[in-house]
Amino acid sequence: MKSTLKILAAVALALALPAQPETLRCGSKLIQQGDTAGKVLERCGEPGNKQVITEPVRAVNAGGYAFSTGATTTYEIWRYDRGSRAFPAILRIEGGVVKKIEYER
Image 1: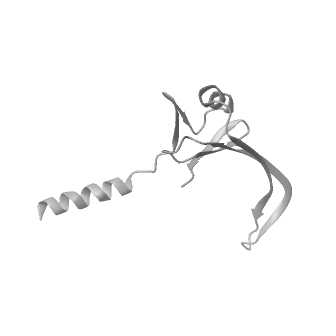
Image 2: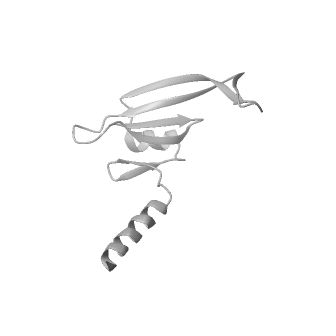
Image 3: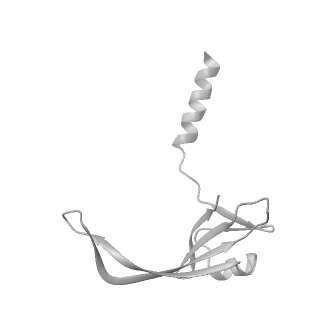
């Protein structure tokens, strides 16, 4: 019974901890959110694929309806293939800074 309570407490503690942002390992160096695009290029080289995406900026009015503000936002998606034994890394670069790191599954 005590071991079950300990296991449940450990699981509850693990679930209560905030999620850690993703990191990308390039050789012996790490890339994380907030790093510059220049740092990524220096440590990881050119990505296998780059996309520039421009989207309309949307807002929500007091009634809860979304509408286009007429402005746009532009960001880049960089894809790094990491070999046959690792999922490809997808980086979202906004304003020259890494905003998000995800892994394609």
